[in-house]
Length: 541
Image (cartoon, rainbow, N blue to C red; front, side, top):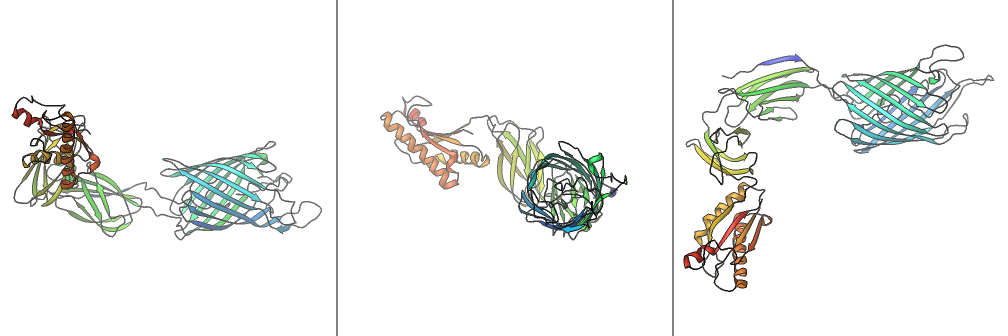
């Protein structure tokens, strides 16, 4: 009896987020950089306003600790190659506060920051190398500029809920130092909170900052971000030392990329397929209409979890030898749907019996994995397994440990059950095919020898990975030199027939003449000499 059970349960479906822009160009949090990029040919542009030096570690104004020390920045990135990203950030406007002497705050240009990032995706982590150059183009309101830069090694790992970032590098300019940082993101549909811990190690200071933030994402490529610094050391510039007043250092910004920042949460569909008669798992194909991807394959376990899009779809479960079943299902984000299907065997189909035997001993081989179409079954203790299939042409693929894979094409019909015996060759065996004999002095293959050659064809076609040596032999009549040449011609004749008549690749066939050196019986009688005028085929693997 057909049975379908649909169970809906809360499930932690993973959201696949793209790496989001950071104010210094590229991807990351605030100061922390992401080792990933947004994909080939993706680009990002944006603007930010920072109350201090967020994302601009090259700005060191140690005596300025007020909100007036602010910068408006433009930034962007581009990925021209899969593993290479270029990025840039420009401090377009900078408000320099009143310090002493009653001077009014000034407004001018800040540094241009140019960089590149190369990434290596690994199994669990993505690692990268980021290099930045700081080019002084500031206006005369500021001190003369100096060149500088930074180099960082990046590592990012994405898990079901969190994304973790690690940064380690150096700041290269007048005041050189080491850059350290770690950050974590929590991923939701539109809401992406994060936190980072960063430190700069200098000869005379060790500023450490804890920076929580949040990113608001949209599915049209726009993202908004906000972050606030909390200094964990006195030199981290989170306190106005003169007035003793706590100052929140914040960054806000807006970015755009044509790459959608949200890949909406998918639903999960757990499909279990069983034989309605036996209860055994059945390998099957699941087809979901108007869905991408539309076809999923379920293996021998009869069970698989599928990532599916949200919505209402028609789902068909089918496999050769069974009646297909179709259902209409609703898939909901963050929910798991369980589809249990019991397929009825198709009683109108053809019946195929496959028996596997050892080619050398003739004994049955149990436990052989036999595949026909999308169905894979194991042979029983007598080496047999049974298939119910729609009428048609099929290829039997038999595989077992210690044996060479064997394939055979068959045609099954609805009216007559078909029994096929698969002779399997042990992977360490050396077999010899005899029965190919020649008239005296001749290299022309007689008609009586073709059945033996056809046996070699079956071995070669059923075992496409093996090679054979075609060994030519003669009797002792004539000189040894002449017999050696004749035996080579006989071997070449058989090799040419296999190539021309059966399409066996030439690289799998080695022809070699042995002359009169390997008789199987005495050459004293005509009957003995006839048996020695032969070609034998030896499997070499």
